[in-house]
Amino acid sequence: MEDKVPCTTETGVSDRYLDQVQRAQRDPEAFWLSQARRLVWHKAPSHASRSDFGGDVRISWYEDGQLNVAENCLDRHVLTQPDKAALIWEGQEDGQKLVLTYRELHAQVCRLANALRRLGVGKGDRVAIHLPMVAEGVVSMLACARIGAIHVVLFGGFSAEGLAERLMDSGAVVVITADVARRGAKAIPSKITMDEALVACGAACTVRHVLVVPVTGTEVPMQPGRDLHFAAEVAMEMPDCAPEIMDACDPLFLMYTSGSTGRPKGVVHGTGGYLVWASYTQEVVFAAQPNDVFWCTADTSWITGHTYVVYGPLCNGATILIYEGLPSWPQPGRWWDVIDRNNVSVFYTSPTVVRAAMREDADVVRSRSLSSLRVLGTVGEPISPEAWQWFHDEVGKACCPVVDTWWQTETGGVMLTASAGQVPGRPGAAGLPLPGVEAVLVDAQTQTEVEGAGDGLLCMARSWPGQAMTLWRDHGRFRQTYFTTCPGRYFSGDGARREGDGYFWITGRVDDVVNVSGHRIGTAEIEDAVATDAEVVESAAVGVPHDLKGQGLVVFVVPRTEGSLDPAAVRRAISDGVGRYAVPEQIYVVRDLPKTRSGKIVRRLLRKIAAHDLSNLGDLSTLSDPDIVEEIIAQVSGQA
Ligand code: WTA
Image (cartoon, rainbow, N blue to C red; front, top):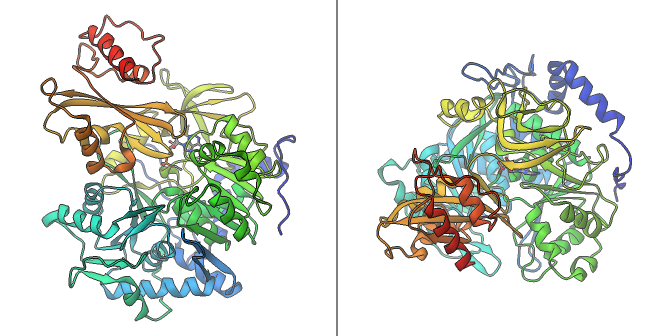
């Protein structure tokens, strides 16, 4: 068993960490060029960054370097540790387990890569991956990377319309989906939903083939010529495949995420910079050791699943664990059993999971050993000091550092954290910027940087290797979204507070993005879906505090005629247009929305009313119809 990482709660920041911070500050070019040596390159880069946050904005890392990501994650480990487990998969039914060594994972990836090439997929083509947590998901991502195809992993909870929108925007030529996905007692009809999505794409459909992975072995409709059995396609191929040599700035994948306008954004990550970032952060944040069994519980369809289920730990030669099922199905404590059975050493999850576990009987966690754990981490939303402490005391048995990690789809990997064994953890705080990360706070009014302790918009003053390069086919929107609020800097969309000693506390999004159980949902996305109901005049979606999910959604809807609108229809519109995961906690059908005289919806008021916080509502006399506020308050308290 590995040595425990010291819990540095009592001691200060390590000298090694401070030294790295200084080195990176003194000479960022040299620092990042030396980090590039983590990878194997066909052509080593001669310089690190040619990025520029001004003008049209250019994000460029290791520009003249050439490499292949799958080779970095597989081939080099096949040479040194072919029989080491690369991937452990456990299914949600008892006893379902699969272990793939590096040699076996490499062979699977090569077979699929060959099959994709045979189906006409080449460098730069997009491949959509729509799978639950099965080994084939990881194999598919790496197979795309091997042949230079750009993967687009799509969440199983998206509706057919949500899938169609992303398939069309990305122009995917092949889709890899499941027959049926399991989620506890529920069966999710993945293939049927995908079929509906392809119908919804209509004449604009670019998809030529659909590969179906037999997750449950359920028979599903297959369209001759288009639909193919994954297993059969893979079985007919050789276990070796020459990797495509990629330029460092070629895209590796697109990841759709929500912003403050309705259309999801296709965040584009590059090849060299992203992989350096995945490898660097996985090692530094989690004090990674060669024998780690690394379990990041995120779904591979989110950025966390890309960087810390797949690319970071595999690039560094660890063993990754993926588990198909829910934390408490078929009984509470399921995930603790997965940890004990597989000797998981690093467990990286979400505050939502921690909050849910805290509510269970204390005996559930106490009856498990959990002695293989070395480091615990959370991501995606703030973790309260109470939840942090519970995680530390009950899961970590008070001897594992807990790393809260702040980052975003756009940052590629962790940016702020209390790196295990190097930076003392502080319950509730996100921690310090990693060496090389130049996090700054900008005053929203004056546009000046806040020095020392204070509050402001969380920005980055300088590019870092994991930074997204652009938005898919919309560089103008990329520039507009991230580089105009605080010119010359990358603006994260979050507000933060810094203590005198440099620790950051995240205060939450300052834009119209709501974080439900770590799922980033744009309120405009919800409103667009609601607007498809002809009975709706307009609507406003807001986030409210939620005990379990962190934030919940509340939607206010104005009907065309009084009594004409059924909240169930609104719920359906959201479920169909976005997905079940975005269905709100509450829907209020109201006569009108509070607006300024110039017609702007005053969301601040709606947020407070929805959260039953009626203090400091402010001066209502400037509204176009001040009475509507009292009416909505009466309605919300009546239904509470
Ligand atoms: C929020 C997930 C507080 C934040 C990796 C950010 C957090 C958004 C934390 C990105 C954290 C993420 N503490 N808030 N540790 N981590 N967030 O793109 O608002 O799905 O902007 O990336 O989640 O969500 P995304």
